Image 1 (cartoon, rainbow, N blue to C red):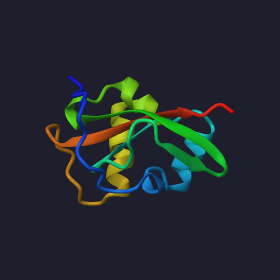
Image 2: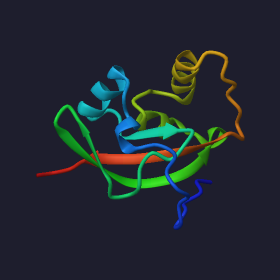
Image 3: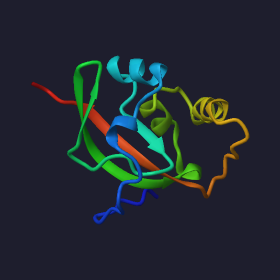
Length: 114
């Protein structure tokens, strides 16, 4: 199950580094990507991420193991299936093992309405 934390550990990076790859930025701007998984915690709930002048608010931040990923999770990342998402991540990080017990930080966000 997803491990929702009420007390989060300190951030390991800044929100400006949450979504940086051009392909991911395009997916966020098109509405196809509403979450990002990272090894560390890059944002707090309520923080604002700005991409190409558009603002997105982080709604939830929680820990999840790779083995817990579902196709719905993959779709929130802009992919059709967990396998498609997995292959994309492994292509970005050559040599990285995909271990079901490995935990990542999920950052869920949505456009901030004016």
